[in-house]
Image (cartoon, rainbow, N blue to C red):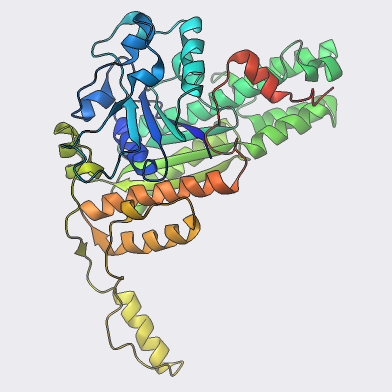
Length: 418
């Protein structure tokens, strides 16, 4: 189940590093996990963890240190019960250094190979906000990784959609590149030029004639009739997974109206309606999360407090009444309350992930506060582990990072179009 999982946001201010840190801590309850701070201009991860960092990416690029020698771990102050001994992180440099903040191609591929060699089951990459080569080159081609956005930052929701669009077009450009196996077999010059011209129009946000890839497919069908290009594009769209997490969640209606619906509409209108969207979960809005970051002790490293149970659900009471009066079932004498609470973070494992998701959902409904935040991350981790165990490796995250040449080989194993 080795997997490299990217965490990106499109724009800053959505709690991306907070999510990436606590998500990596949660995964470390299952297997060795490394969090890498690739937001190299801000040093966000090291500023969130009160850990003495002996070596970081500066030592990797400037001093020739091996990447695995740049790992920092939690000490007894942050992890007195040794619950997160499988967690380690690699910090960005203490201060912005231009050659590390803006990596050259050679430096980027050097880092890619070093990440692939790390001795960890899970590697979480905390990417910088925005879209440039230092973001796009670390993202997978067949899924979005984890996109983080919040109902409180509308621009970040659209920026997350731009990441999906960029990944899809990057993959299609690789497939339809001149000299690719697909081109060699099907690329009549005029047809190939037409397809790439149409792609240019779809990618151009100012071109209204072809607003998305669905319109592109329709236009291509009209121009060329049934053809291999259509089949490949349809396959790329149908197989592409979009995964997102809502941060600073403050209510179902607000989150749907201000985050999920705008995100879905943006993808439908400007990318494609054929994509698979999966909400991995949410993290509630809680001032304790911000306070924990300020104290450089992430909230999952805080000792859980006694959960505050919600009042007995009136709907369930009415259901009891109906069962008694209509169905003749014996009345429930005790109020329906959740089972005794345990810290779900400590119960994370790589098996029974679907059952655990359902149980944690029930628990989250009945409590608030510190325990609810912990359950949020447990639920997200169970969702991610379920995907990794039950789907192909390219469905969520990726088993390794690829250079452009390796990406080309990955797209055309055994010359699949030849």
